[in-house]
Amino acid sequence: VQLVESGGGMVQPGGSLRLSCTTSGFTFSSYDMSWVRRAPGKGSVWVSTISTGGDIKHYADSVKGRFAISRDNAKNTLYLQMNSLKPEDTALYFCAREGDLPRGRGTQVTVSS
Image (cartoon, rainbow, N blue to C red; front, side, top):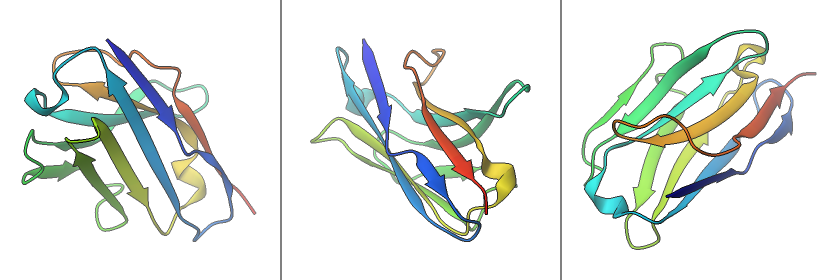
């Protein structure tokens, strides 16, 4: 099982980023998938979850209306579109499959002026 996050970077407040999570080694379309993040010096926090078919999505209140989770089951890839970024969104972002801890190295998102 492999999950590889990418797409992070440094942006100014109000900016946008699109994260990707490329997966292999399991049947991607059979799992709900989530994004979690870990801010410096803090524990991991759940961000968003998407159902296997992509029709059901849930978001943490802190990102609702600004972030959008999506998936492409044909490409075994999970996405997180992040808009209107705030400094408090600064964190290491991980993807995880249902019932499992994050396995990848994460991708760093830094929001700073």
